[in-house]
Amino acid sequence: MNKQNVNKCGLILFLFVYCILAEFFVLRINQPTGKMLSIYQLNNTTNMIDTPEINEILKFYEKDNTKKNQNSLDIKQAATHKNGYITLHKDLNTENDDQTIFAEVDLRNGPTGDLLEVTKNLKMGPLPIFGTTSVRGLKSMGTWSRKENNFEIDNFYKPTNETDNRFIDTPENTALFSLYKDVVIEQLESMYSLNMLNNKKFDSGEFGIYLIELPVTPFGMNPFTIGLNYHQDGIQNTIPKDPELDEFKIGSRRTKGFNYTSFGPKLSVFDTQFSMTYEDGVKTADIRHISDDSLGNTNITNISPVTAGNTAFLNQRHGIQHAQVATGALLDESLRHTRRAIFILFSEIGDEWERIPNKSIF
Image 1 (cartoon, rainbow, N blue to C red):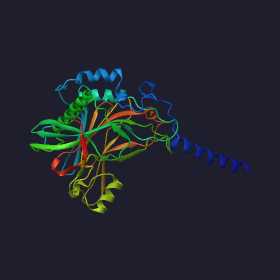
Image 2 (image 1 turned 30 degrees about the vertical axis):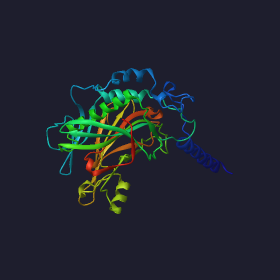
Image 3 (image 1 turned 90 degrees about the vertical axis):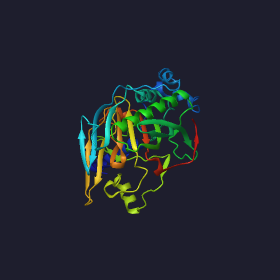
Image 4 (image 1 turned 135 degrees about the horizontal axis):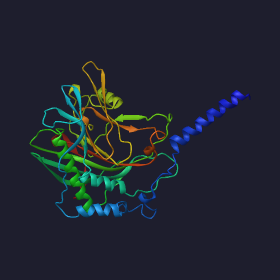
């Protein structure tokens, strides 16, 4: 075998080993030991929230009717939609009649900020040394209602036919559910003030709360770029009564990852409000608006990244997407570590949705 062939074989072997290590055997050497459960605690979800930091926060929410308010809505940026046109704002005038389809708001001084601290301090089971992992964490679901501009949480529940095993049910801790309640109301009130919800006098809907740990991002095939997989997330605890039935549109929607707002589609599981709140100092999801015009041309408007710690509100019914980071751990150090975040999905216009079978908690 000549030298050229040896070099070629060596390069092929290197690329093969690199891809295997990068894509399938990502080392979990950066796990914070203070946020890991011992092997004796893995079957007890209460241990996930039994930390000094979390206990100190939950003291505030131990009593009923406790509510922590921010003085005003601190809007960092927003995007509005009117007559098919997208306008980006740094200082949003919430009194206009444009539909707000995206907003970045600082809620760190309210319940959302407290729940973010809980999420950051959750204890999780240790990850395996080798292998790829998916997102994991705690979840809870419930229903809300509104009379004029007053929001209430009607109940919390868990599905009886749950199929998503990435998340486990929230421990039945009264103080934690009191915090959940305040967070959901705070975010609904924020979206209402931002003109992101409908203007019905009376309304109701569902919500799903996810306290998330995002896994370490692999280096990927090209470690010198940050790969972004844009998509929308569908609500899991309720289904539309009158869903989109056109198979061609369903296939196109899945391929492109957005809703056809220009053609008056029926309701889909993606026609929901979605909020994301990432812990400080990490890369957040990129945001964009995507839609087809009457000629079938795809139009994309990129939106500046959200500052970690702030809350991003996405009106998915109007074509707002967010990106899953697929590669780039060599470029962004935060991607080499697990990242914590709060994701909440909201449906509205309750008459259009049918709740899946469930068991009430509170």
